[in-house]
Structures are given as structure tokens and as C-alpha cells.
Image (tube, each protein chain N blue to C red):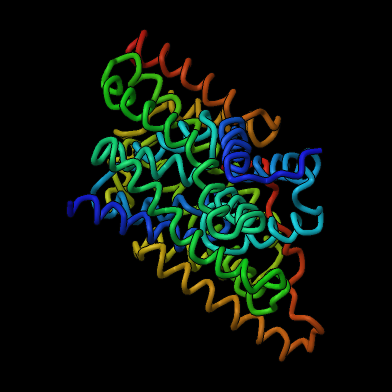
Length: 202
Length: 194
């Protein structure tokens, strides 16, 4: 098992993962584990689990965050830069080509027809993602209030999502403190706060 | 120059506030890109479909697509770099001091409060995108019985219903569903001209 984690090898490994994964960021997580823990042995299993947990809790795409953490662990800031460049490059190239093609052919009657069908399927895809997100808390009254408040603020009052998200952070901290005070719970940890099933996330 | 600055600023904000990954980013893309009049809801739906069928994450795919479409080749790079920068700053700072961050009780509570809020935003994004895709209505404010009856796109509604059953009930892969829906759209709207 090679122990040499040179910048070029970090870059190439990340690029391979970025190019091979379909279905979004969650789909990359097992590949990070497989490449960096099992195959190369550069990172311990415990460290990887911690990094993945952290990668999901901070802003930004999970795959991007995890690649930055792995790169930083191996080669500090230069490693982080190289790792994130590698994981992003395949998407950047593929999407650039696709966007030019899309712009050129989207008005063609057959392509426009296919796109119209695809957009209908995308609505179904979003409903499915929504149901997956909903699963952990649909029996939790406080969470449901927050859900409907966010939904209505967004769709009826057209409030910018950024303000609603900031409100959600404030709500989470306040509601957590309130729960401790009223229920005298030992940790304040809400029930069923597992991350959503990764399969449906893009 | 200023168009690159605007693009960079928009995607910096999207990177900074999309917490929870994947579809959590969609409401922000709707707010920022559609809100500024840079894209339509139908184009955002196209990004979702394209990013399912291409490698990589939704965030990066969306940034590249929007950047290239709005300002060309260089715009794709600008938007992609901009959406990564918040992650790069926040994550490397935490990596220096952390590994206990996930255990932090305040972070856990904030995340718990955020989950239903982000879900509400996803529900809103799904509704907003369903309006032009299925009902032929541009926005919520245009929605009333008159527009609903004249604009409803029956073949699209049927495709959406069949897709929903295939994905939710039969757990079919989104890639297959998008391909089949594309073929159905090609035949129904392109060849038959419905």
C-alpha cells in the first residue's frame, strides 16, 4: 500500500472520484472512504467519519467540503486547494460543454419536446427529495410549524431564501434552549435528527 | 467586468447559505438567479435534470451551467470558484481547530432548526417549478382558476405522476426516469406535436 500522498496523487484521486460519481455529493462519500481509507491508507477510518460529519454541517456542497478536509489533513492548505480543484474539474469541463450544446439546441422542436417531458419528471424528483427530507420530523409539532412558516414565507410572501435560512438557524438555537428549559432534557438533542437518506439527494 | 463580479457575488452567497447539501441549494438558486432575472424556473429545472445525468455535485454543476450560460466560458469558472470559496474558508479554518465541531451542542441545535426550514424551502421550490412545468403559469401571483384551466399541460402532468410513482414507490433511479421522460417528451411534443 502506497503511503506517498503527493499533491499530484491527491489531485488525480480526487479527479477520479469527481468524474465517476453520478447522483451528487452524498454518492461521493463512500468513494472517499474507499480511496483514502481502504485503498491508500492515508487517513484513518475514525478521522474520515469525523470529516464526513463536519462536511455535512458546514455551508456548501458536501463533496466539496469533504474534499477540502481530506486535502487539508494530508497537505495543509495546499492539499485542500489541490483536492477541491480535482473533485470539481470533471464537472466544470463536462458542464461547460453541455451548456454550450444546450444553448445551441434547446429551441429545436424535438429537443424542446424532450426538455418539456424532462421538466415534468424533475417536479416528481423534487417531490421525492422533499418527502425524504420530511421523514425525520413529520411527527414533531415544533418542526412542522417551522416547516410551514418557511414554506409560506417563501411562496406567498416571496421572502429571499437567505433570510429564511438565517431565521432557521436562530430558531434552531432558541428552540433547543427552550426545550432544555421546559423538558429538562439532558442533552437538548431533538429526536430523530439523523441525516436524510443520501440516495435521493443530488 | 461587472457582470463577473455580480456572478461571483451571487454564487458566493449561494455557497455560503446552502447548508445541508444537494437540493438545499435549490431555493437559493431560485431566489438569487431567478429573482435577479438571470434565469427562468424552467432553466433551473433543466439544471436539476442535467446534474442528475452528469458526474459531480449539484452545486458545482449548477454554478458552471449558470456561469457559462450567462457570461460564457470564463463565467463558468468564476461561478464555480465563487461557490467553493465559502467552503474553502470556513472548512479549512475549522479543520485547524476542530474535530469536535460536530459535537458542539449549539451547532446541533442550529442544524436541527434548519432541517424543517430547508425542507419548507424545498417544498416551495418544487411548487414554484411545478407551476411553469405543469400548469403553464409563470408565478404564484398569476395563479387563479382562469389560468389554471387554460394553461394546464395534461401530458406533462401525466409524465410527472408516472415519474413520481416510479421514483417514490418503485425506487427507480432518477437517471432512468429522466431519460424515459425525455423520450416521452420527444415523442409526444416533438413528433406528435401535442
